[in-house]
Image (cartoon, rainbow, N blue to C red; front, side):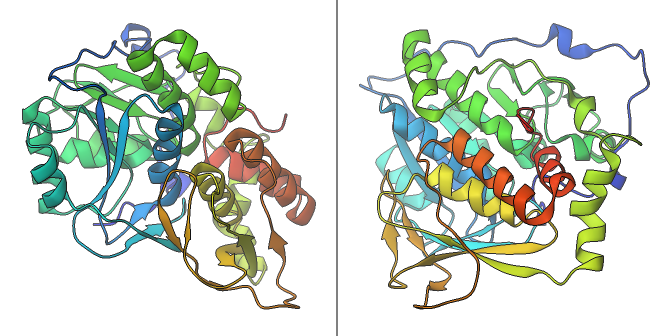
Length: 370
C-alpha cells in the first residue's frame, strides 16, 4: 500500500480527551548514545526507499542533514535498480532520484548490516519489511520519519514499544497497531532500537539529535547552526496542529479541501542546480505541492540530471524553457530551515496567510508564522 504522504486528511484523526494522561512524560527525552558494534571507523547509515514511491522530504531531509555532519557514512539504498520515485506530503507525484545502491548491493558491501536505517513514509511491500527485519536482527536501530512508523509497525517486532508519527494518523494507527504504545507530544521518541518522529518537519531536529548521539553535543550545535535550526528538543505539542474551530480548522481545510475545490491548480517550477542541498530542494517542492492550489516541479536550465551537495542524482521533471511564464521559485538559502520559511513566506504572498499556515500545520512545523 502507499502511505499517502505524512499528512493524511484530518478527518481521519481523533482528538484525545482533555486531561488524558500524557504518556510522553515517560518516553526517553534524548536519543541513546551510539555504541560501535563493529570495528568501523564511522557508523553506517542506510536511508532506504522503495522505488515505487517514497515521501520526498522524509527521505531527503535526514539524508542531507546526516551527510552534512560528515561523521558517518550515509548511503541512499533502494529495493531495486532504477530511479526512486518520490511523492509529496499529500501524496502527489514528485521528481525522481537516480540512486546506485540496491539493498542487495548494500548487503554485499555491509554483511554485518547498518548501524541505523532511516525509513521514510513509502510504499510498503513484503521485500521491504523482510529487509528491515533482517537489519533489525543484525542490530540496526530503525529510525522512522513521520508515517514511516507505519512501515516499522508492520514488521511485527516492535510491539510494546513507544513510538510517534504524524498527528493525522493517530486514530487509524492506534486501531491498526494497538500493540504499539503510540506517544503524543514528542517530536521524536526513542525506545530501544526504534526511533520515530512526528510530522515532516520533525526530521530536522531528530536528525540533529541523532548526530548528537553519534558525535556529541558540540558537533550537533555546529551542525544546527549550518542548518538554521535553533534547537533540536523533542518537546512538542501535538494538539496544536489538529483541526480546532477558530484556530487551525480553516487553514487545514484550505490546503486539504477547499483550495482544490475552488481553484484550478497552477504549476510552480522549482529551479534545481548542481550542488544544491537535498533538504532545501525537498522542503521547497513539498511545501508548494501541499497548498492545494499548486503543484511544484523540479526544472533545470538544460533538462539534464544534476548532482546534489551530497552526491545524489536528481532527475528533473523537465527543462525550463527560455521565456517560460510558469512561476519560478529559485531557493536562495542553502540552509534548510530558512529555505522552508522562505517557501512558506512565498506561499503566503501568493495564496494568503491561511494557506501558508495550513502547509505549516500539515508539516507539523511549530516555527511558522515566525
